[in-house]
Image 1 (cartoon, rainbow, N blue to C red):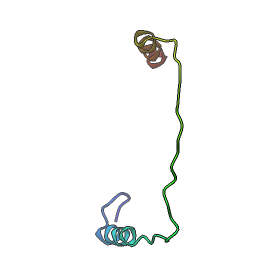
Image 2 (image 1 turned 180 degrees about the horizontal axis):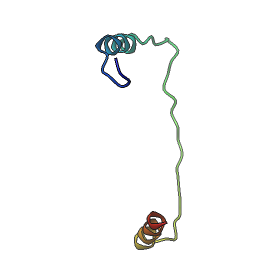
Image 3 (image 1 turned 180 degrees about the vertical axis):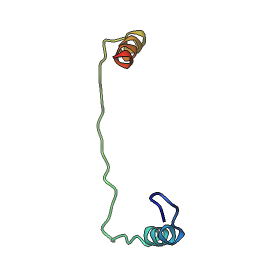
Length: 57
């Protein structure tokens, strides 16, 4: 079998492994509270110009 060839047995093995995930009783989701702020002095046009300059280099 060549590299990257589809292996049905491997696919089935991984699918079975992923379907049997054990979750502990003490597993809880972490809740995050807060805010995110950012400032960008650049306008959309300036950012596009900068991007185009980066693409041409």
